[in-house]
Length: 473
Image (tube, rainbow, N blue to C red; front, side, top):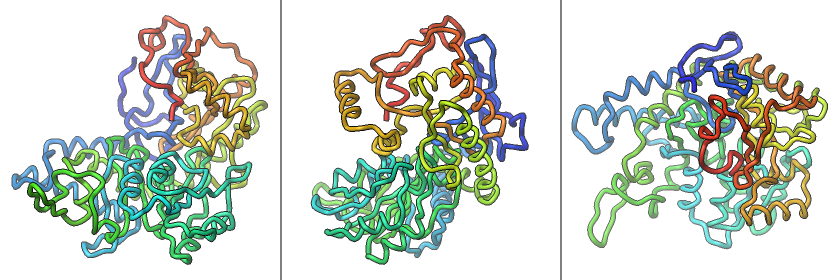
């Protein structure tokens, strides 16, 4: 395989920043190495070159934070705490030590929402209002603590303010509204400002899953809690954040118990320290935090207006191009609705996993397929009935994942060029027109994924990755 390197995209004018690995070549089934087209930004993003440089600069000073008097420890602690202030600034919150909000540094959005679900004073009979549009990270944690009441979507995968208000006004009143800022499946942007205002008028706090929005638009400041991840923010080093009122973390046991979260421990007693340190037991991911901070700073330097304009152009190019291909069915709101540069679609007569495999093996294009960790939403977008869902469920329970419902998703970011999108559109058009595969593809019943039968560099049986299905989630 070709070794990853850092370089500027050849069509540099269409990309906003240099990403690590941009322009690498990958092997295809015809023996030609092609530029890798990364259209899977909604899952995880490559590192910004500036992020990688900041990590390299910091590594000689890496040390345990908060616990050492040595020079390196003091430098690492200062860098780590500077990131905490950067998180608050990125979220539009006060960076004053006496400010109302704290930033807890975590691994990712999933951990942040699990932490929040544990820390809020919830009883099993309490109600959490949420939506069928959510990523599993904002669905599953709440089911462990309370009852969930659903805001449904229409056939286009959207809902409006009235739909939200009806759920908020039903008895008993919800203790919290947990909602996404942007769909990771369709890129749809719910009207968060209006929704938050309606919730606050009813005394209901709002927890925002900001993971999908954070790399593309400013995070709304009105929600009470915000969670987001570095791995979607061009900082793939394993850090994220939960921002919320200090009062939510002042009392009670933290989600994780251990060193760093305490002031004093005896055999039968523990005195927890103040937030946010109370929520960060154990040695934190200092390198990940530094990378996270560098990414937030770089996005703010580029500017949200510039990022939005770039991605709005890509969104129209992507969605209009796909919609013009016979046999392609776009999921979600129509082209007149403003969305992120994310498009999920199906292709007549072709399994979603086969489409993704062929795009990769024959064109060097990376996309996502499956249900995108948002099963309830995608099943609605696909319009599947109860019998079809039940059939898939029975098959999965016996270990056969070949017919798990799904779609193909292409998603863009600041490193995506017009050429990247055009190559995808050409490849999808070829598949839709019946382009024959150069070799047979075999589907694995355990994973549901397809793999070409080929003895070629990058695609031989010995190079097939082990592990769970690409579409699992």
